[in-house]
Image (cartoon, rainbow, N blue to C red; front, side, top):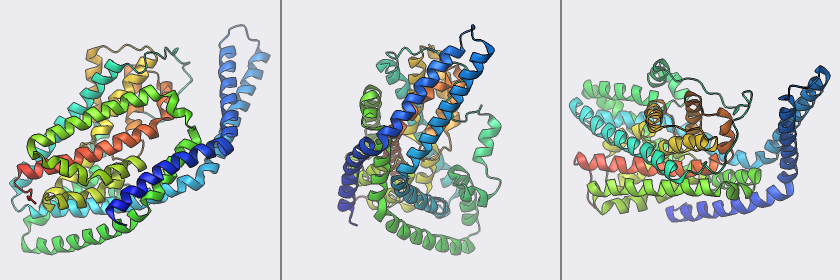
Length: 457
């Protein structure tokens, strides 16, 4: 499938997904959604009655039984809805599983090659330092921009929601994030375990050690480099095969979202979605501007080269899906393969620009919806904690959502407010995944330029 045709097919898949999803929602899913909505309304009424202090023991028992029955109705219909959508979701599930099958070995082989090909160990530290400096600046800009714009737009202020009852929660597990947790997330106990669980940051750490060790043993290490180089080429060839079904994956993912939520989800949260995407566009402009300072006009050539990858990440809601294509496009752009193999895997653990912006934007949106005032000092503290918590979060669907779930209780923001964004999160995840691809591609090209490893074509 040629590059131009892949872009066209993915775009067609997006349009067809919206149309088919809308029709499926009307004729198949709507009745199920109605039953769920009626049951949820009934539970809210019962919860209000239970909060009254004048209920007798018999009334309390009856209300509790009714609430349990309605909860069972919701569970039953949720399962039925998932079954009805399974034919669509399986398309994207297959594609994402195949991509995840590729990612771990591809990151390991390319990063080891990138480190080992840098003969001077001091150069590894120099390149790593420049890379992390860029990532740190990009992270701070993304978080600060998200915080600034959500305060400026105030998308949640018009909702004026009452604080929920204490027993209401988001249904997403969240816990305090400690230094011990962070260390455990960074340093692997077992390389095999890290590979099996697709723990990208742990794979990066092992690959760095392995690459440095390979470079240190001289000629014997050259054998390992040749083997891993050949392995990486095989994996990239497999990637080409997997990409053939990318349009089907996009179609399945979009259809399932629209079929489940209906087009009403677009209008209900149109303001929030619109303001978030305006914020992402501003972030894109800043990223491209930063790249322009270093790359000059060639930054536009790079953006044009990775547009397919960004569209793929947008359609599948995961920047990991675009990783293999970005790798190839950067080398085609003129970046040194050793720089690409070194910087790009690090970016997928440290430089999720879109995810960073979303974390502050979504957290403060929920606070605004419940009229929870957070002074500037607390917002800056949240920003720093998010920087700490988010490192190593892979670019997979809803990864940033889990980080937000963990941060809300730490600032006394109702965790139940998560229900406000869960439904539309797939739509937001598309934009932030595409942003992650843009940020990592430009970061890699910039570091290549700084190192004098960018070829002019």
